[in-house]
Image 1 (cartoon, helix red, strand yellow):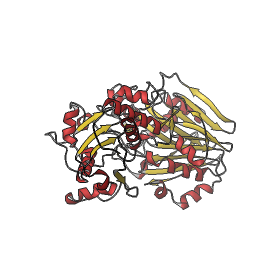
Image 2 (cartoon, rainbow, N blue to C red):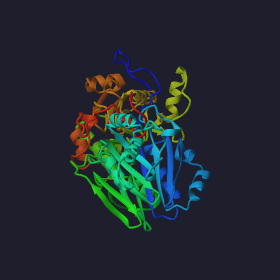
Image 3 (cartoon, one colour):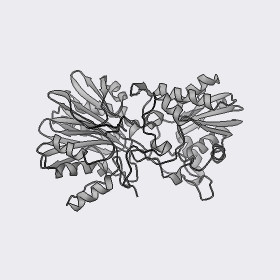
Image 4 (cartoon, rainbow, N blue to C red):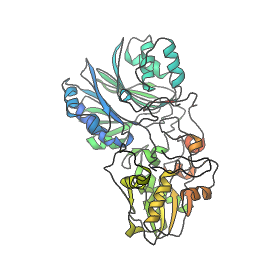
Length: 480
């Protein structure tokens, strides 16, 4: 990953700095083919995690899991689905994962399947626990032996240490101890619990399909399988899927919803609905507000695929500058291609994104990005656009500046690695090679997404949950 040298210059390197982020969770109860349904739903959530995938299925008496590294189609083979189908299950829980640190190992793939005195549970988790290190140390001091480096496993050990007489009560006791961000699907052989942290930082939507109950990190997964959304799981709520249907079994006091604003900026798919707002339309509105705040004389507006495109359309509509497809994304290149030698780094860049000279040559270009983290990607994209013949490149960013790390499930780097802290827009523009640079104001971003009440810690440092430990990741290992 390219970084920043001591002298302030951006180091050369492959500029694909894409933020590694929240995982994806899916659950279904009461469907005649829950394994295949979960498999298809995970494809719709693939954008939330591309390092591992898994499915756990239960038949009322047993739970089994199949999981592995890679994309859904690689991690779960036909033989895996057939093995789970052999249970004749009526419930399943699925997960796609991103590692928030280097612990991208097969043993950390989810759902985790764990056996203890009350039976077997499968856990799929999206988020980060901010007191993971202290809880892990406490469990280890009491004799717990951990099998993974994920904070998700801490929940199981807390459940096992509870004196509760049933899984649901043990889960409630564990949730009372953890802090941070979590959307969870926890399955026993005969039911599923869906859990969301009291601040509601990570999303979870509930739905139904032909009498079956479903839940997913995003509504696009429900659309993919033809399910009807019912409602969002509320902050602090624990809901249960069982033979008696859907019921809320626990609701803790919530300080008010603080959904991660970055879900709208980058994480969620454009066709998803979050808090009653379509993600694509929110991004368009962010682009429109960006155009009002930072107009510039130009000939063409170009969006950076994929999550910058909606904002670019909004920017173009507001300014009446034509929108053009000036950057093309190669959708068949995975994250794990062989790292190139120094003289082939630009080839590696063009493997992912390439510019269209006939669109850009001789033109003043407004390049619209969803966000800028270290600045390395922006610098290389601007280089691509200039080499395609653009005479000016004005970078417009449809989110506020990143000035703080995230502790809730997004791998935003340390403050020292970020581009924005301590620099003016003009200084940042010089570093990335733009003729001008402007970011969306935080208040405009919040208003575009429907108002306030979001988690905006990476933009303003106001953490809704104190990041008391060096945080371990539900989707990865402990941070150094």
